[in-house]
Length: 114
Image 1: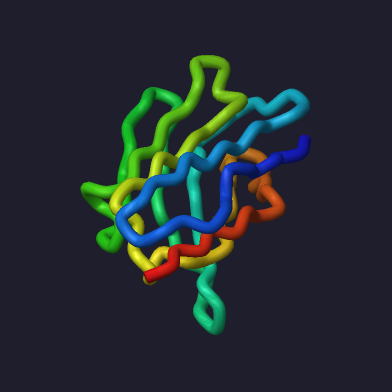
Image 2 (image 1 turned 90 degrees about the vertical axis):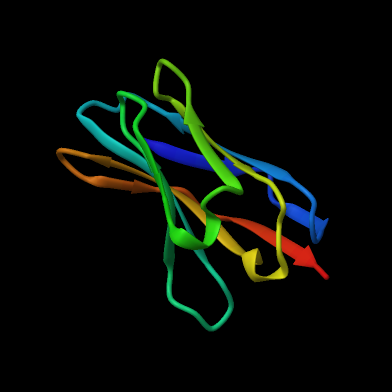
């Protein structure tokens, strides 16, 4: 199983980006699909999560600005990021937690200029 993240880039403050994470291979026993981010010199930070039933949760810094969603087959998870701020600059990683293991994507860089 591999997770392929995409959609990062350079955007001005106030702009939007949509990240995608597509899983290849068969994944069973999904508990949650999440996005994390890691800014330069900082620890990895949880951003958002969604369960197979569609219940979502967000970290305080992104509440009201970011939205996580997934497809019915649970093979793709998206992160819609609006009202981006320079503080959102980071490498964003997707994660799928199953009852057996955790899968991680390779990361996609988001840079927000002021």
